[in-house]
Length: 67
Length: 213
Image (cartoon, rainbow over all chains, first blue to last red; front, side, top):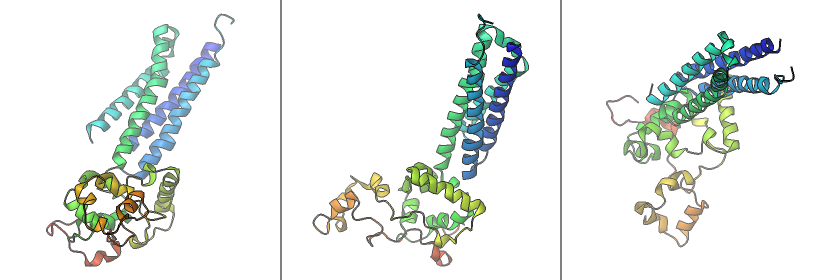
């Protein structure tokens, strides 16, 4: 059960990072001040959220020896 | 697209591909190698991609085309081609005293995101006004709240013989010190006060005359 939960967390984190990276990718093809804002706020925000969620899932995972 | 953008795009695509492997085949994360791969794909590479992309955006923001991508800056861009050496931006641009690719940034190196916190906030306000506010006429646009900071001039001219030995710069005792300390500014002192002057756009003649700016 904890393993399934971990996989779900990994998928959520991965999904957030992928969406963030896609936003960053789109912004790179656009030479405009709004592209920079899009990159930093939405793209960077989603990537940061995904990374933090991933790290949180690692530290919150139950100890395998005790389970 | 330059090579730096290509690298940023390649790293982002590689990261997305690796994350897809982790997300669609999570079983591989059971082993030690899989765990390292997951850490690389969901932490190290996204951070690296964002860092490369951020640097890329910052470099691009220094380009003349970036500044002129907002139509309210069109007349400021045209002022670089005025056929009159009294126009400081035109003289710098046409005589290649600034890098043509970074013409705006070379003289406005403390502007918006490249300046302090207040400048960054003003940059955000500019974006807000551009998309949601009432855009002023080009002649009513004030690039700075206060006077233009002479340090933008001095980071190139300081130490240059033409500046240091310029007769007008040394007209009175202590004048050079006042210029260097910022007490006497290059533009508000009445010496170099013809800058973009976009209100005169209708009367401009351009150099080269055959090329439309």
